Image (tube, rainbow, N blue to C red; front, side):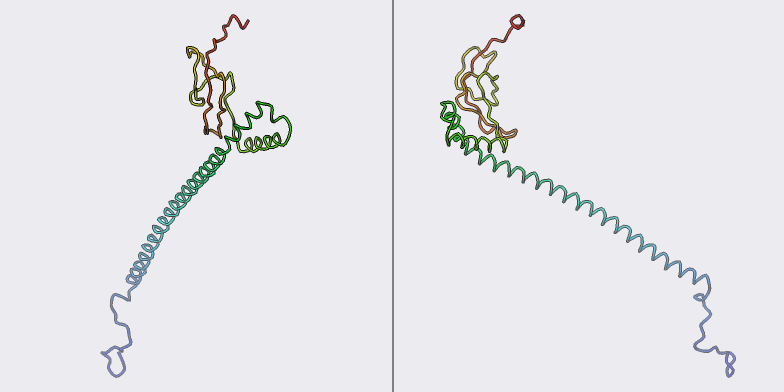
Length: 187
């Protein structure tokens, strides 16, 4: 509708089709919102998966750290055992010297005291005293006297040593039988 040609519409005028209606505009806005909701749902799923993966990674790291600490403690214990085991013969020699009275005075007494202090400091414990109850998991019997019903240690030929819960060396002993004290003799 122009002045020159009333039946013709101008070229830049929008065509009167369905795209310009308010319903079409609402539909387009709804489609755009639906696309945004789908993208948001995707982002939420990706975030949830990332959180889940992070949880797994944290658990893996905690397990690796725990295993490392266990291996480290085992390596330290193995090194202690290796070093202490080499000094057990020296401890035996010092025990024999002490039994003969050679460590009552002098420089060897000071050396013996220092070495004993070092052993105690790292947790080395000697066991196997005369009169103790015989335990096959701790004592190595080289001679047995009696019927074996109430075995106790007789002579201790070589002390046993334990570091923590680990037995480094069994005590070498002779075993004798002792009659248990009767209830009448205790009175």
